[in-house]
Image (cartoon, rainbow, N blue to C red; front, side, top):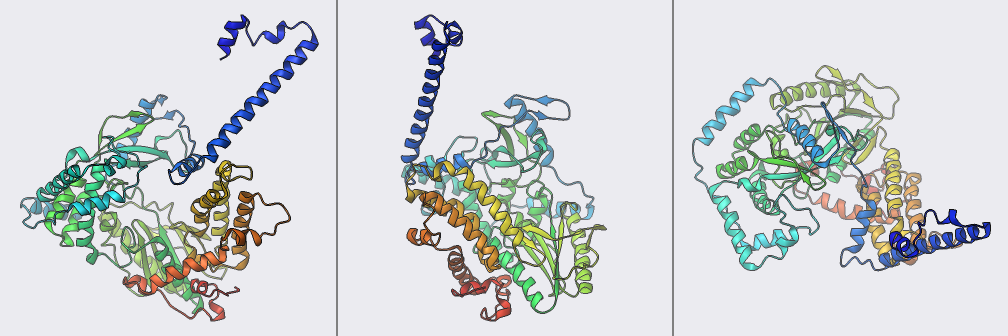
Amino acid sequence: MKSEIKRKLGIDLRKFPNSLKTPRDKNLYNRAHSHLRKLHQQANEKRKAEKIARLNPDDGSVWKQARWCTGDKFHRPPLITSTKIVFTNQEKAEAMADSLEKQFQLNEFAAAEAEALVLRRLNKFFKRHPTDKIEPCKPSEIVQIISKLKKGKSPGIDGFTNLLLKRLPIKSIFRLVEIINAILKFHHFPKAWKTAIVVPVIKPGKNAQDPVSYRPISLRSSLSKLAGAVILTRLQEATESHMIPYQFGFRKQLSTVQQLLRITESIREGFESGWETGAVFLDIAKAFDRVWTDGLIYKLLTMRIPGSIIMLIATYLQGSLFTVRVGSNLSSERVIRAGVVQGSKVGPINIFVNDIPSPRNCQTQLCLFADDTAVMSTGTAQTIMEDLNTYLTQLGKWLIQWKIKVNTDKCQAVYFTRRRSYPNPPMLYRRPIPWSNSTKYLGVTLDKKLTYKDHIENIRNKYNGVKAHLYPLMGRKAKLSLRYKLLLYKALLRSVISYASPVWGAAAKTHIQKLETLQNSTLRMITDAPWFIRNKNIPHDLKVPTIKDFFSKLAINFLNQIDNHTNPAVRSIPTYDPTIPRKKRRPRTLLLQDNSR
């Protein structure tokens, strides 16, 4: 535009002010320039306002804009490797691939006895062909799986999107059924579907110039995911009866919230009986990336899973490839020598840890969600430390045997008590794990007195961060309709507050009031309410329940499922009368609508 004006006027606009002779002309020019800049700014604001006003959740435009607002605007800087500094996307992709290739390796532990046992059993298994058959899939099963796929997911290396799958004609669906049934019949997963695109995502608080600071997110082909979902169904049916009851990861009708309830109710029960609880939270290094695949196949054999399924899982896990994508550039293909791909349907990490040593007494409990492991012991200080150290010694031997590495520096221990003094810290590999005042487990911060003060403070910080990102859509002057603003609040902001609320929602009134304040301030902002409107009137008029009432509603549904659950570990969660005053901080008090706390 500037070049066109310059050509027509025959002058350089940047030098035009200097060519003016009188101060009056310069003053008029500066005023005109400021006015033009203001008009340009107003036009931009009007264009953005019109764009926001046209957003609609039905066509996905609201969610797309919300993702853009809350998404990470991270720009990857040059990476520093051991030999050089890389700048281009292609060089960065290769540097990331080099780092991940070293990451997808077995932990170097001397476990000769276990290696010989696994090798002998696998050689015997692969010499014979399994005679049992896998149940073939039906077109209705494929259609049901495709209907559950999300449209916006990124495609794999073949560029085949979920949206394309949803629009396949009936003849193509039948062809897919034939291909997947051939995979099930011949117990062989095609090599073309075992290549994943890895997108590196920076870990919070890490050095962005170090290739090791990135978490690998794998994108497999949509066709591979479809076949993986079919295999997963058959694998779960074969393994469900063999799973230990306190493993809640990747299992139907079991969730992180149920495991958290199991932990906290056990601690509360100890408090009321005059006991204390010591807990160790283990950090497993590269849990998915360094799984011993031969050991995993061996454990499937010991569970007496049908040989045809084991053979298929073996071909799925072995010989996988990956390529790293940075921008639009792809690195060369590399081999995954260990581990299971994160993001794949069939990544049975919970089966690999299924034979973890069981506690020897009822006072010691084991809590698992995939690789997130917690060991608890309740009683007196002396018995707690004896039980914890005995179990950690036994666990340490098992970890070495199956080539699982634990970051002892990142493991945490919390002594749940109302006292100020602690016993000596527990030991793992002869190294003490120091006591902490709080720890974050499965997304909830547990402090030593279970007041949840730190957790609610973390919620406030996270909530305010998301709210700030969504301000262009939900601010006082934003042109988005009130109905859609409320929809964004309930979907993206209130969910930050309510995660695992049936576990901690009975916290002290002063803590819950902080969350009520967050909701009131947000509702006042999206309605652009004047100062004289009372906070209690805004939620009432918008038909938005208070945080306390919303927590009660969630707790009623959740605790009803707990009471009717079939899992032994869930059924062992203590029950009690919530009307007893000394139990006012326990989750079941949320069932009392008039609970005054």
